[in-house]
Image (tube, rainbow, N blue to C red; front, top):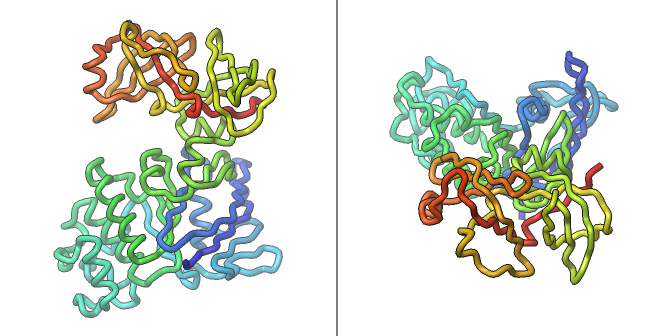
Length: 369
């Protein structure tokens, strides 16, 4: 299968004295998406612009598919237009005086206004993006979602070796954002173009990404497959950046039969850790809200060795669209995500007593250093 090897090992000093120094070496399969994830100000956009050639680092190396795009030591610098990358920003940045057809045609190197002039590839991209029926419109006549589809089609028409996306869905309403994410993911898989997507949206990272690079303070702190990184963050900072709701100071007290006993406040949790952890070790116990299930205290099932059951008091309930976030007091703070139907069936309200159940395999430990 076709692979795109991308190496970034650069340094750039900002005016405030902070140094952005991302390092990553990844291989992307055809159509795969690498998500660069992290909080605002982490340096994600800076790294994307460096890959595109829109910003020149102070030092280091950038290469793609074995071609060196930047090497400070050897004084190599490949101009952006020679890198064959497509770039889409949060705002569509379309040419206001050109039609949709002409904007897309510009990506192929000409601006004539007919669908034929775009070439068969551009016409196919427009069709797959669902904008072939608006070819004669100007950007001011488009909705936000349509304009971003045009920007994506223009970026993909030249058949770039890499597509760079800088939070391209952030300015759209939630339904449009969800549809466009799905359409772009399917399109990239179909045409085989790999992409690097910058986002700080957790849902976007989970739905769009094959790989994720977590960036904090100008550095890539963890990189791997999305499911692995989100379920097993490398440290407490990464866990917090990934939105793991509970990052709890804890201590390993014992090990028996492959299960660790971990003290979190006055509670004792059973944890199935993949890595050996010595008794007495200070750790953080990371628990995601989606891994916590709730049961009524008067009907809770019998406790099983592979599942922790904690008596808890409901502190608050907040709606998050189709689901509710339930904040619990278990002697330590804990969140659970449940459906509205489950909330009604459990008759939940602030002050209610419940049992929070957490699988031993769903608790991840990271060193407390």
